[in-house]
Image (cartoon, rainbow, N blue to C red):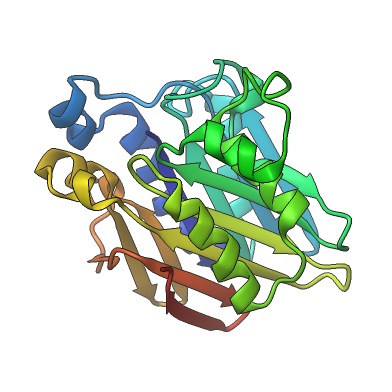
Length: 262
């Protein structure tokens, strides 16, 4: 599993969150308790929407060793008024190692919108492939996260709440452990919206070590809204609160809506 971050607000205010993500990837006590391993070192990436530009970066190096890449992100944040950030530090469970499976993934659809997608958890990849009508041989080396985002690219027709809930609820139903996701959509008129999910299967939640590691946390206030993996609370002391299991968020500029995923 991975460490993830979605955040929007003043760029400089998001800098401590980016630092907390990097620290979480380097030394994760929750992962150590669960598996005996403390790092998320299988690559990292981000999407940053700022000032009419989008910056998409992926690296096969760990975030805590990629000094040049991380410095580029903090420089972009430091001078920005309002930004939207998706960031992901990978600890692989499915799919080959290397740059291809580093998230966020980018897709452009035939329906007239583009999106970037990241995911934390494990899905039944074979069932995603079957659902989408893909050829299993084509996707043998890709991660379950890539397979589901490719399914979204094919199946998602509109960006209204009901349509998003329908397809992301399908994703949750195919979860082995968690279906924690963040998707940033870009529309032809230049506007954006984000859709987030926080879902953990009941059997996984029953194990305290699994639950502590996989849960999501939320931060809202002082012009910042963020949803992140639990480990960030250890490295950024703020007014975090736990996200209720099964929550979905639809976020547009100046508006945050919460729904039940399933």
